Length: 467
Ligand SMILES: [Cu+2]
Image (cartoon, rainbow, N blue to C red; front, side, top):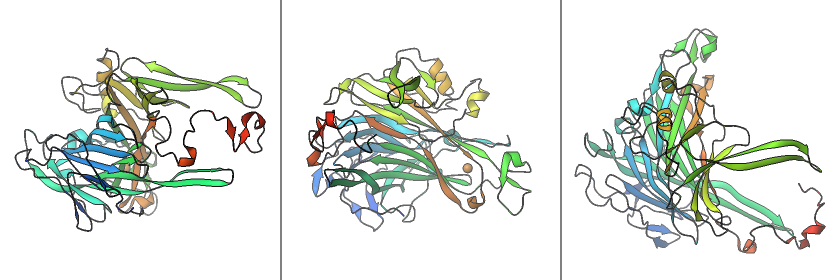
């Protein structure tokens, strides 16, 4: 189990949710620690000092905020949607000493498709079953070593029009140790620091599987969306074919069917105010060798219109605000880091005539475009339709991020199944001119230095062990 940090930062706050809302049933939001204490709403207490959250949350939302080890503060509004499950809204980050910046207007899962390799089953767990409503599980001390947050859980949509709203402890909020933040030794002195992170998670039981929706907010400004799966293998998806599954019982006759967990997340970006842009970075070796190493040329290319894109070596994307610069004069951006993923083509897209999957797609925001497939709205069935129908320049950017896991069952999946994870990271790129928490001895270090360990650089061209 991860070590739980002392409550250096607590909090929970909220704005706009203290009044009754929803079907007139919502009371003030509270959180309850697993030790039974209830967090005080309305202020953020970091290191003993109260900080207003400044969140402006809507009806059926709860405002949350945390100050982390770097001194950065995250704040956001949280809601539970019957289909999408946990939805994060107006996610804002205040670097230490900096101004608050809204990073994303909206962040949630947009689909989870599970096609079985036997061809016998395809589930769309977001648009069919839904991660919210009765599928969303109450949590206790086993699932949550931090604080439990009570949220309105609507059974239909966002609860604004139909269904019931239950108030249940469905979100776990934990601040945990996140390991080493940096280490750098200079002139025999070691500078090193650890960091913490803030995690929000829910559990949704869909059939035999139980899915953990998890968002981790780093002290360095990174957002890590992840989907975990546990529960049990499908008891009805077994096959005689060794090519379509793996034997997890005694011998080699019966195979639990292999299948894919095709997850797509939707991020509606903000990055402050003003029109945004999307850029793809690529780098390739030129084929020439320099004095010691191959020459590589790389650069950013603007993706001017809605598009899908695929992973490639040395390729990444960023969403950038060309009108919002950091103190170094660089436009503020966030990088989409897919990490390890099994690329996929959504089966529903293929059935609808799309010929090509994607790892990431970019479109202009449209409130009607919510799900990656099965959207079932006049604006299109899914992402390929959105891209095809979106001819305006990309400025109000939504990214659709596809992260797949081809699950070949193994003996250890019985029983219950060990949690397996898939996800990606959103990493600040030039949000601030330097790292958030510059130690005092490194203050002013920005750009190529004149000296290293007191030596002029021109005497350092052949430092032993340098690279
Ligand atoms: Cu699986």
